[in-house]
Length: 371
Image 1 (cartoon, helix red, strand yellow):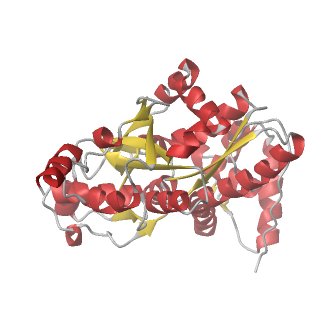
Image 2 (tube, rainbow, N blue to C red):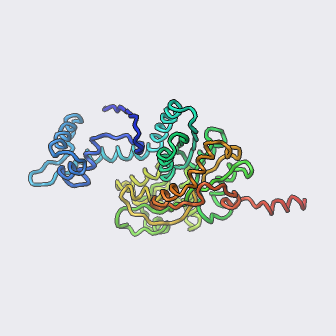
Image 3 (cartoon, helix red, strand yellow):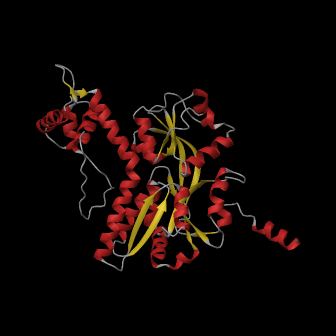
């Protein structure tokens, strides 16, 4: 059994939180480029160095990593392919936890360097734009605002807000969701008008992640059900799981017709990686994750990504600073540059009954008066 050791460094670099291993990077480069020389060039290393490292790792692991055949380009062995898949899928599954670990460490360091810094703890459904916002805040206002973002399911995020474990939460809903939907049944009990305040953040597109060229010609959930394409779902409590169930209801499709409905992964990156590795044929997710994994994307629906906080939190210095950042032209330009995203009333405090049309205040008030 080979053991893992994890390390971290302190720097002013604003790169994403990653736990990297040089062997997997070597295998990925060789696989992508089709040869050791091509992989070496892609990594900026010499052929001799890459060849030597691959041989060293073969001795270390006790398994061959490359098929060495005279006159043929080097290619990965089945063991090396499995190793690369296992690492990449673990990375995708653990990305939210890795990001949360880094956020916790950086929170401590932020307060150590300057105890006047505004720390905003935000629990949220996994989202590429929020990850970008965190880095944006570090670059544009590093001395005044630190976003401590913990990625979890939308339901758990709002529960964390209600339990006082964070000051803001992030969740997402379809446009024009209508009444008597799973979305309403899921979120309405967790949110109270007058107590919670919804803040605009972004619009994003949910759609089908499929392999390059879309070989199964999947353009709708009906196609997914009809072809019995292997599907990978998101975990219970995630906003995308709620979105899927509402889309299935709109299409009059039973979840039992989706081949793989019970197979779940914890993030957009994880389901995209499962499709890219051939473990399934299709998944529901965001365009940015599909592009990162080298997949094609079939848009299905637009949704709003909301931020929500308690009314009393709007006066907190950190929240005031965050809303100013969200309203800035630079941030909105940044959001517009993320595939599948657009700014949507970013930083504006919105009327809950307009963006979440579940409360008919006028009707309720007239009914109470009549009684």
